[in-house]
Length: 119
Length: 119
DNA sequence: TCAGGTAGGGATAAATTTATCCCTATTGAG
DNA sequence: CTCAATAGGGATAAATTTATCCCTACCTGA
Image (cartoon, rainbow over all chains, first blue to last red; front, side, top):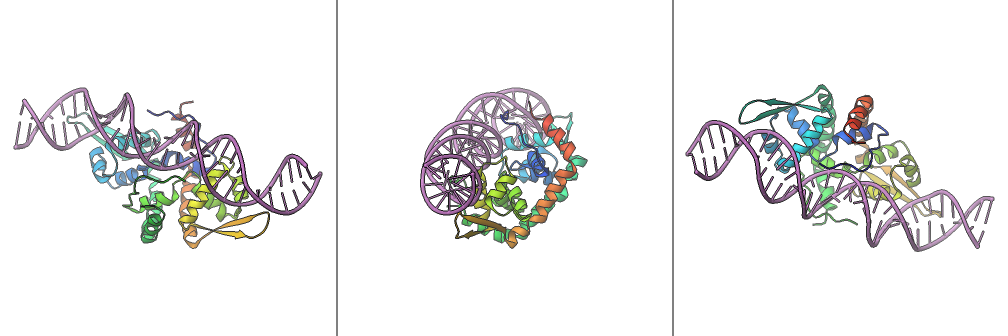
């Protein structure tokens, strides 16, 4: 596991949120869990762009930040389900707002981003 | 300047937002510009944790994504002012929601983050 | 004349994040 | 027996992001 070499700066709310929500797939994970896709394999299928490995790592971070919880069923083959904690649930409206803004400006954003990406 | 080696994946709104809003200082820059701190030197003073260099770079990206505009006054010593475009302004409520969630859960977040940061 | 404020950017190093590859274990289907 | 599905993690490489350091230019005030 990677160990950070510098302490996080936690000055304002935005810093705090950044610490738990940065990570390429975290918001998507929270969102899909909220939508009912709770098993790791389901989440992996919902987010094909991410490798299994990264999703595991990011789920673990979300868990350590108590945004999600995890139930391990003692069955075989293994079965695991993630769920949103109340704390995690409180974040859903925020993620929703972000996603909505993105969706609303989909075309414009897409154009801008591609324009600034040398092919 | 760094040139990316992989194309961005733009599947959903969250991806799109990520492309323009990721970056350690971008939300803070937008927020402070919104609050009326428009000159680069003012912004640098408001965000002492960031080097001049990074703020310049991130401001340039915000500009290329048309979230902020820039007025260069032809005076000496140089004077520059950034402002939010209408597009940028539309993002303020979202940033506000993020910051509010962070502020509301300040103590809890701070505890969780520090707990997961080996000292 | 020299320090300090104004704005900007190149080159490079360091930190951090993501991606890849490979290995463990078990059960049921074919 | 072999392959796919289930879940997880180590080791390492690659990509990306941030930080550092240094240089340009001009004007004002001490």
